[in-house]
Amino acid sequence: MKILQDNKMAEVIHLNYHILSILYRFDISLGFGDKTIAQVCNDNNINTNFFLEITNAFINKDYSPEDNLQSFSIELIVNYLQKTHIYYTKEKIPEILNLINNLEFKTNTQRNIKLLKNFFTQYSNEFNQHINREDNFIYPYVVSLQKAFDTKKISKKNIELIKDTPIASYQVEHENVEEKLYDLKNILIKYLPPAKDPKIINTILSKLFKLEDDLNEHTRIENNVMIPKAIKLEKIILSEINKNKFKII
Amino acid sequence: MKPLNSIILEKSYIIGKGLKKVLEESGKFNIIDIALNSHQLKNLLSHHNIDIIFINVNNINEFIEIINNYSKINLIAIVKKSDFKISDLFIDFINIFDDRNKIIIKTDNIYNKLNSKTKTSSVGLSNREKTILKYVALGFTTKEIAEKLFLSPHTVVTHRKNISNRLGIKTVSGLTIYAVLNNIIDLSEAK
Image 1: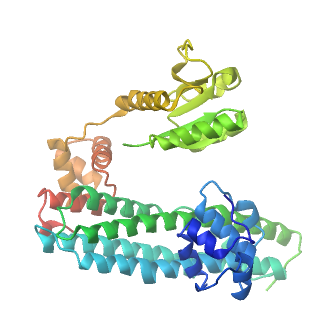
Image 2: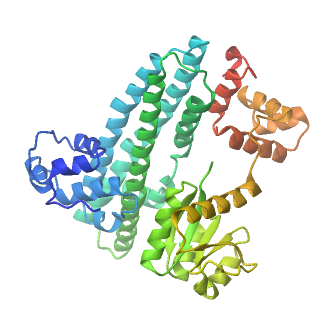
Image 3: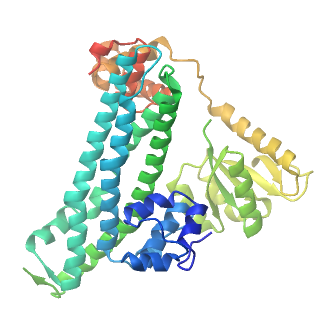
């Protein structure tokens, strides 16, 4: 089903509680009574259509937000993606690391914890590197494209960037990080000896599965929305520069 | 158990969607998409590694040429009668009027038929594989391992792929953990 602006926010959460994490990222607090999505978004100064597209894409994998999302400014999208980065690095990953530290196994506890901790720390370092590259390089670049397009002004340096390292050269790159997450799940499920408290292992696993889902969604928005949009901007900018429609600063 | 990547070629919206739902329920098929025309089919085939196409038997002539370009694809006919005479083109058929139990037996059969072709034994690693895993976990590259064991790099790559498939672990650090847990190397040796 598709979620619409006149649906009640509370009912939508009953429908799919994963939406809670989206609310959190949009900084929307609970306690909205019977307000509709449009009302809650208005109260929180959030673009309702953007909220709906993200939510629908999140709960329905068959839903293709591509066309509609194209109508939002690239800054709105980048902003959202950045917020999800903070959510992963400041909350989800530390939570999992903390749980690993509390694990105890029936045999070889110390060795096993050490193995897991090293592995997960490595994962989190690679993840941070990947995110830093996006935050410090790719996102600002994409935003600068939009700005150049809007103002019809572009710096020489940015022209070089479009020519030398267009957005297409950044695509994929998620691979190794994804593989590590996959490995970790199998190590926990198939190979580690039983834990003293199986509840902790189960919690870690559910968090890993959830993190994976979240990351896939994040990648989907990057690959299907942000990157095509940036490619389009690059093309238009280059061709308009050739027609002398841009002021070079 | 890995779901088989599948496409449905069926123009009836209800049959297409219905079949998708039923196949997904079994957990054995990953339905990449329902294709309606040759353009969509070509597009799907070029972007995904497809194992199976479920195809309305009446439309086979329209698509067979495209499908023939992909030798490893298996065809299942979508039919409307239980006494369908299966031709060499198809490995099996699904009758849309069958009840739930028959459909479940059918989809299980199809899955098992295809899976026995590609199945790898799951009873641990061979000695050769263990040796290679050991060197991988110790941090040696494919080239170095090839030299040590007098194998071609290509052979080492194949072994590494088999090891990863069998264990469900793809990264070197993941393999290292496996190696320590199974006493193939010692924790102090792990990088």
